[in-house]
Image (tube, rainbow, N blue to C red):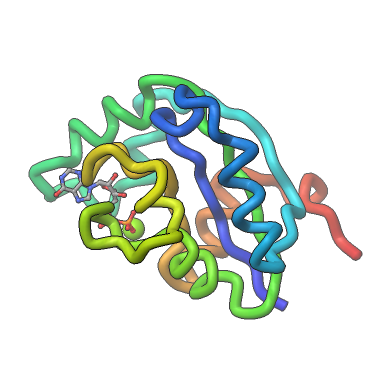
Length: 139
Ligand code: IDP
Ligand code: MG
């Protein structure tokens, strides 16, 4: 059983599709074991996306991710990290497979509806970034 971090980004929250996106996770046997709405400050967003600090889109990404509330969740299930990435689809929604979250809800390469951890190590770091251990449901 593995865990990953999911973020429903400000564009998707604004579009009122939180429920539709969470359903995709549940339909694919990922369990939501922690969930909360957060409005990132600039400092927190910069820290979360530190790996991208040299990329040309970094400051736009920070502006976007602080533009409104986000919904952060911990998803648990078999192969959760890779499974979530598959359900999300490619970063650029134009290249995303049909039936993926980004294909259905993204409107640009930046406003692509969701974030998902890209490795087991990053999943642990990202879950710790948003949640205390006692905020995550354990069976
Ligand atoms: P990922 O979210 O699929 O893991 P990353 O390469 O880690 O993709 O990029 C992080 C986020 O930065 C993307 O989800 C997207 O919102 C934004 N982003 C990535 N590439 C570009 C770009 O070329 N232009 C604008 N924004 C981008
Ligand atoms: Mg990434």
